[in-house]
Length: 102
Image (cartoon, rainbow, N blue to C red; front, side):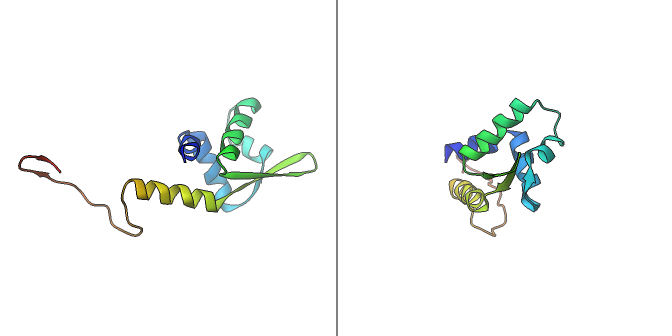
């Protein structure tokens, strides 16, 4: 689970996942959205693949990336459980009570 959270911690990796939500994309198409060196972007792809958040398929000379929704959903469920948030529940605010914080 820590690999998942580490992968989600970086804004570039979150943006890559957001791009892949709608459709599979080639590495080149994804790279066009960022002003990053190819080795830097490859490193982000590696972290996402190691966490299981994306898969890669070679098509000729291109790599096509897809989001792995089951792993992404597992990460969200794990975070919700960690924070003790029920699915569909509205956020609650904790109030200070006499004698300290609840």
